[in-house]
Length: 208
Length: 208
DNA sequence: CTGTTAGCGCATTCAC
DNA sequence: GTGAATGCGCTAACAG
Image (cartoon, rainbow over all chains, first blue to last red; front, top):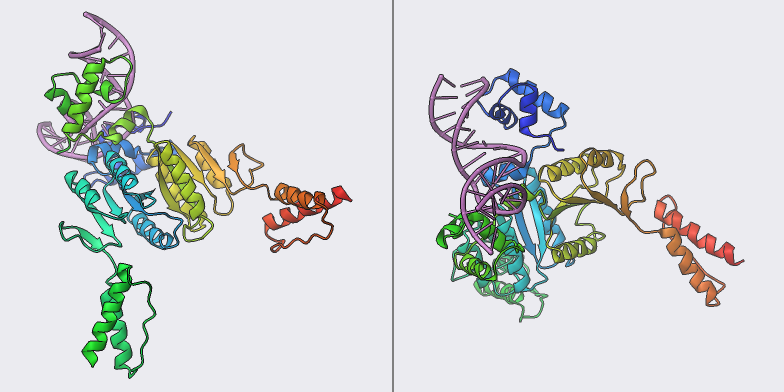
């Protein structure tokens, strides 16, 4: 069986709370008993049960990350960075692929809420209103990624300002004396491409 | 505040246990009260607290997955499939990048054990003995991936039998009448490449 | 600085 | 078929 707080408390004849305090680095604890507890804990091969802890403190130190499909080369770099930063802050991430299906996305959101993750990072699959409403209704902290902010809702967002990017890039060229500038772009039906074009033209117009 | 079992029990004047039974699809429960419970649960926007449940049933329905680095194109396809199958069985996965560092790998293992995942899928970074021992010592179910089984330990493994693969591939060519067969291979210092060569030669010798 | 008590939200005996 | 009681492992008041 797993060894619990109670076991190590019994062994060194202390109360559970004192052991808990020693383990969680509480201020009001003597150096001596703290060391004692820590030593016997590792000696007994104690592994704190974070499930129990989470139930009490109402924090799980894990965040949900919903992306389209990790198989799409667009995502791994992003996921990697997220995981890294999460880790540095002692968080884990639960990775979910929505396959770009709104329905699957909602299912994941539901599960993540059930599991009481501390927050959700969502790269929405298509129309995002339903997911946003769902998250808000259950007051789950979240931030959207790779999406422009919704006009209807007040949400945290991280996304690329394509227009501004193209704008300053073009400006840079102009200001360095270039006058024949081409824009190699994707199909305008795709929103980011249209935005890039806008930024490009904006810069040109400004400098006429 | 979140709505709990107790709240819905109070509302329809039933005991907590009955509500619990209704929600978990227990056999000894009448169709009628079950429907009543289910209805008022969704009406009250009830979200089961899986943390609390996990503490009791000692299952978290989440598994840990440790890979080298999701940024390496070798992994996404694998991760995707794992996540998909896990999902179909109502599991989530916690994704961890070891960056091929044994030390980081152990840190992740520790955390996953603390969080009481039901099992761990590990693609080991280099020497695997320490991780294996660690997992065994804490009797955490695990299976190794992309590694040949350890001779020292009895472990579950899924890996590619490179030698056999090359063997049957070569055999196939021979049996279809080919006699000039080339093996395009990587550096023999890399174990899978050496194994492929072995399989290749084995097939040739057999058919001489 | 330490011990006692209570409770997190749920499942599971055991009675009825 | 349903309810009352107990406990999962831990933290957090409240005293002393």
